[in-house]
Length: 256
Image: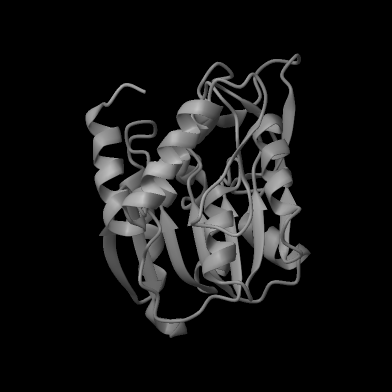
């Protein structure tokens, strides 16, 4: 392991968050298991269930962000019962939420087939966790991956331009709520690599008024103008806004 500034920061955060012994155990197991040519199980005292990662890609970086850096250690003014994780990747954020809020029903959306396979493996451990191979968009349609060579955590989707494109189903959040009988989303996590541009630009009026908290990473570098679009969409509710790491946290005061 090359001790970059990011990794050293994660180690420091993890020692404060998880303790020295738990942090050393994570690093020791990772250094041994990452040599595997297959999916490996990362033992950790942080969770009562296994964490599955793939060697040689971004999975451990996502693990660091969530379980070492504490990316989603966000104080909430309520205990969420319905959680939607859009851009779930391999399910580590959903895994975190499932143990923070064991009574919650979790709906995880992930379009990439390889990520979705890992997501499904994690979700099998929890009866109240549903997975959908689905991209979040502003309408029900089919999309294609626009950067197929990107890291597993940064795949982007967009309108298909070639007949040979491999398509993935996409759905707007209003349709997803209605299809699944969801009246209120307590916690909506969005990390969809620029597609938040479409999600907050069109067809947001119904679901945004029925969502208590939004945790979103905006990708202004990928989709210039998305921050302005996001701010405009929020004008339809009364809200509190704060920053937590790379995420913007929105609390809908109309639903408290």
